[in-house]
Length: 311
Image (tube, rainbow, N blue to C red):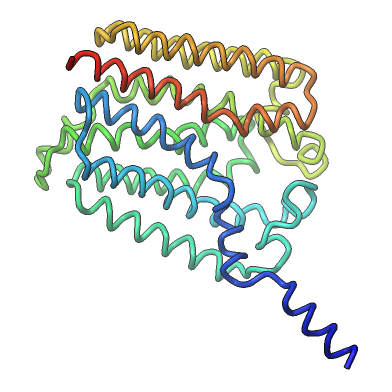
């Protein structure tokens, strides 16, 4: 009886398949989705000159969460042999063997297909750019093996919502090839470049958490590449991000609310300096985890600026 009870208790304490899948896609840690969401929504507002409409808003919000979840599954499969040597990631479902590689890839593919179905409700230009975004997302995890700044590749992947937003707005509902070329203007690529620096900043903070483990297993990260200039590099990337978006704001004639948002974001970046300057794991991870508030502040200033124009 005691042995039977122990087996029942052990079985009840084991995580369910659903809980393992939710853990795999970081359902309880949505900060990563917000890091994707805010620049994409900012681009939507800029491209549309204000509120882009409920259809595009739903497509981009839902698509962002779906693709980030799919990306987590793919990333965990690609990094499973490395993650087992890192304290913070050793118990991830794929790394620990609780979820098989086939299961993780099937889940990731299913989520990506649902996101693609949403994109199909837009236009040809957005569909084509979504394929490019997916390719970069799949390619990114493998860059840690040979590229000294894989965070730059992540920056492209996490910024691809910007050209997609312009394509969705300016490509209209057309499925003609002629509408593809002019759907994404130079402005979108400048916004992407600025956002790329923000991604490098916060993902370097993330890499600083695992630097000791990454050095042992041979993974390449920006935190390792920058070495003792890591903190300075992070702050420089914050400055470049905000500087590029400020310059574009001047070009676009954005108002006081937009620049107030950038100033507030600069204040958040300055606070992050106090968190990472000692390079403690706790401080660096906290700075990374709360970075979405910086992106939200920029987005909120942009939305408020457009709203005030309509008053």
